[in-house]
Image 1 (cartoon, helix red, strand yellow):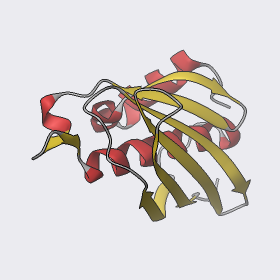
Image 2 (cartoon, helix red, strand yellow):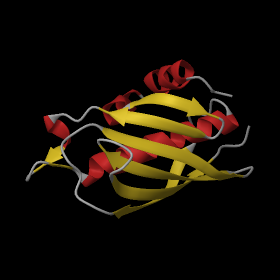
Image 3 (spheres, rainbow, N blue to C red):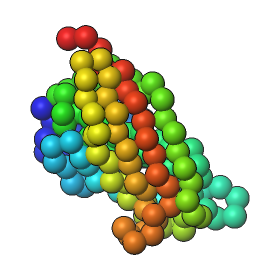
Image 4 (spheres, rainbow, N blue to C red):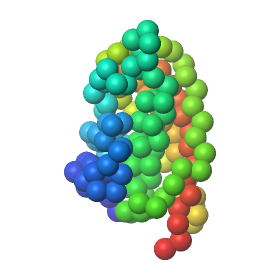
Length: 136
């Protein structure tokens, strides 16, 4: 299983390098991760708010990473469904994504993610996602 922050970040770099644009794992445990995205101008939409696609990508990478802590290294695990509810306008500051695995079966996994703007007192989105896990 991928458990340490370093193992997860190395796994992302080696198997999903474009995921680095959606943040880095700061904390991790069995079935959960906390990621941080340092917001840059490229993440902003007109009006100075973090874009929806940025938040969706961050949540996808966070839940996918949390799933890796349960199933072990599985780069071919792919997103089957992702649903996001935008709750409030995010500020153009660092974003946090706290993701956890809800269920792991033989062929799929389900997780959720809370996205925060700045700190964990300011939730801006809630995400659920399902992933297809390849046969071993």
